[in-house]
Length: 97
Image (cartoon, rainbow, N blue to C red; front, side, top):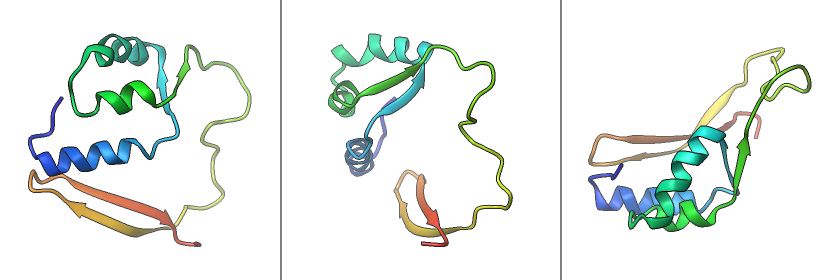
């Protein structure tokens, strides 16, 4: 899907390059793997070049990905970006830092 605002699209693509890897399930990967290689979308180069980590199955016991916390995590807003389309990006960091 394209973003109607060219500046927002440029910003989004620049943020994609900050990702060290994409984490996704097998179904999502298969859909994306069939789309991005031949796409001329502005995000295509980043989507093709950034490494993917695919998770075929998550079952059983083991170390939880999101363990229960003893207390709520306090966050602080560190950045906000408003786009003409009405989309608002909010970036938070731990209030402890």
